[in-house]
Amino acid sequence: MKRRSFVLFLSALTMSAALIGTSPVLAETKETTEAADSKDADAKDADTKDSDAKDTADSAALEDGVYTAEFDTDSSMFHVNEANDKKGTLTVKDGKMTIHVSLVSKKIVNLFAGTAEDAAKDGAEILDPTTDTVKYSDGTTEEVYGFDIPVPAIDEEFDVAILGEKGKWYDHKVSVKDPVKDDSAESSDAEDSKKEDAGKKITDLGVEDGDYTAEVTLTGGSGRATVDSPAAITIKDDKATATIVWSSPNYDYMIVDDQKYEPVNKDGNSTFEIPVSAFDTELAVTADTTAMSTPHEIDYTLNFDSSTLKEADKKAEK
Image (cartoon, rainbow, N blue to C red; front, side, top):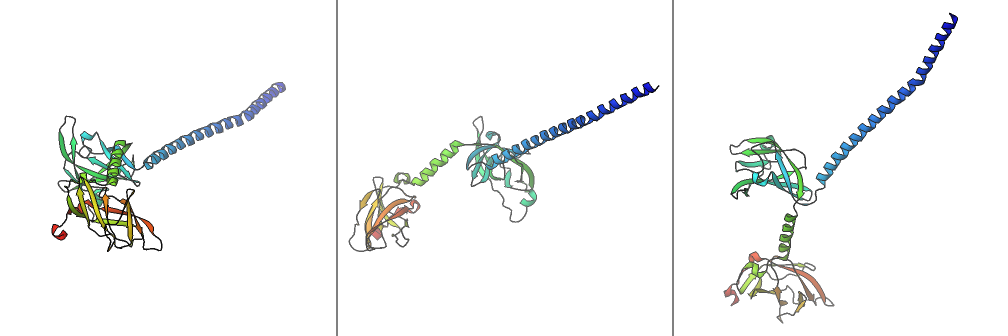
């Protein structure tokens, strides 16, 4: 009996030792698993935040330019014309985004960037339509209304209210997605900008040979010198020559396009006849003044306004 009791006691002692030795391991395993799960969750959360941050950065990182972008709406009646494949023209300038979309008809007469409730308030900035011509796949064309809509963010829904022909405002949700830069539009804009910077040639103006006048603006120097405006202009063989009369008799020569021109008068304010290579742009000229203790060349610009070009008064000439 004593031997059996002793054996049972040893067995119980062995089991207790086994449990004592095993429990910390089990606890440690559980803690390790929980830590791993927590780490995985943190990693997933970090990935989500990184993805969200990337999307935000992508939206905010749109540089100035023209893009083609999808314009999604929540309505089967208010959407981009099918001729444009759900896309509009997104323009980014100085961090502000505007998308131009051509609609399906002329039944939507006004838009508002916001809710219908705000659109009805006094002072609301209502968007007026443009008249767009769309071309369908079968070659036919149609005039529809289009709108320039401010875009607060890319890939995020925002409110737009529309006004129909019956005079009631309706709320809608829209979003702009997948902007793709339109290099051809930028090239076109750059070319137009170059043309504007270069001004207008005589051939662009389509005027005949003869005597004319045009307003001229002088800039540069100290700001005290002026020239007579309008200036007399002679056009012959698609070339223009302007008579520049200064407000002082102290200019002894001018330089235009690296050519030196002497005064055409001896008495009175200094007068020069110089070529006008273009209108509506800044033409660089240099004038030498003897008003100071030593002569000084001063840089100026002259801008001839083509919109004021008109035939000279023949009576006044006589």
